[in-house]
Length: 414
Image (cartoon, rainbow, N blue to C red; front, side):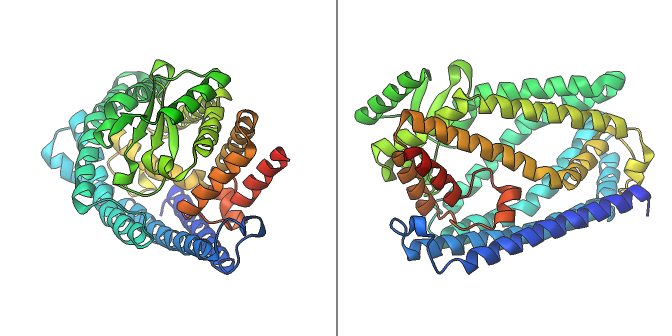
């Protein structure tokens, strides 16, 4: 086997082993602590609710372990197993050299991944989510969403990939920089059109009708010096009983979106506190910082792709004997997650820092006790574990552990 192939194989197995080890730790830790509610939550969360959250977390974690094994098997089949080379040869019988063949190869890989994901998504939705009372999606709605997502991905993804392939073939050694500019423009465009054109394809959005709630939110927005285009309610209960609230869009298209499940479960002052937290992300420029970080990282990855594009060892080491720009894109998408996994804790740490800052912002404009009450209800209603494995949390959790987060807010309230 080629040297790079050995390096990739070692990294793939190390990453998979680490992910499985972390998942095993997490499931075991949660189950080991399912028999007692953490002291600071004992008055507000019952043992039954705590155990339900533990079992739900363990079920999701064990299912994720199956997903890790499948990902490894697919990566090995596509590379060393000759899957990508076979797809190349198949598309070569249909199309001559050029962009269309490249698009066919990438679409073929996407179809393979989609077919593999379908049974996993079905099990996740209709077994795990159903078992714990969260699923509201019907089989019909599942497939309607699937078809819509497929058509949308094709309508948006194929032109973008075609543009990148054209830039790779036409813009010389600096193609990666022009591809980066195109990718940034595409993402900014998606941020602008998502609220009004894409999101309504999957959910129904209606103006917030509760006048008292609307007035409360508008007063909060005025205190924070924040302007939005609309206050919307989304029919999240159509698919799931999980609740949330979020901002979408930017500039003049900014909207506040409440899940109907959130409004039905939280008191008005608790909804206001959750919204103040989300406002904190915007006022503290967390969204802009994260976008800037993603764009910067993507520039580095595109430069790296430009460097390996004409390196024979990159293809030969991964079981490919027919190099092409499209093949390079596919191989790179397989390789990058493997070699960057161990850096994941840095991104999670950065996100948790932002969550603490947004909590502190919320506590300046609403009582910290209201945010605490809202978070406790959300932990309970969403069956979020109160006792995650610390190391698993360091790697994966974008939000601080419940006990740490509540303790920090209690200090603020005190």
